[in-house]
View 1 (tube, rainbow, N blue to C red):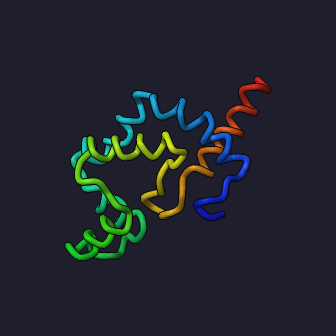
View 2: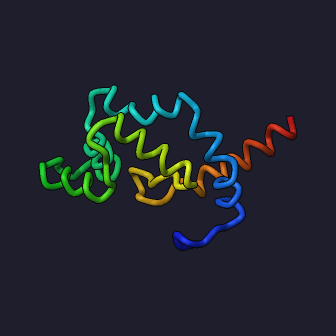
Length: 117
């Protein structure tokens, strides 16, 4: 659905999951991995989308602009945390689709498995 729509999954995520997950210290580490590994996140995305495409300056600029990639891990983590507190977990760097529904679905499956165990 659209940005203004709220499904059961995103409602649960907005009213609990995102707030609990936003404070997890591992998320900052994961968000900073592209920079910590010494690789350019735009180059990583470009290669994931198409191994054949030449990573020229224009292609990298287009990926950075399209995905609103932050210039550094600190500003990226702070921006992500602000969005997560509002229920917006951001977009996949590979597909460009919102990750919230995927996270909500995975949390539901994990929760079901935990209850069954």
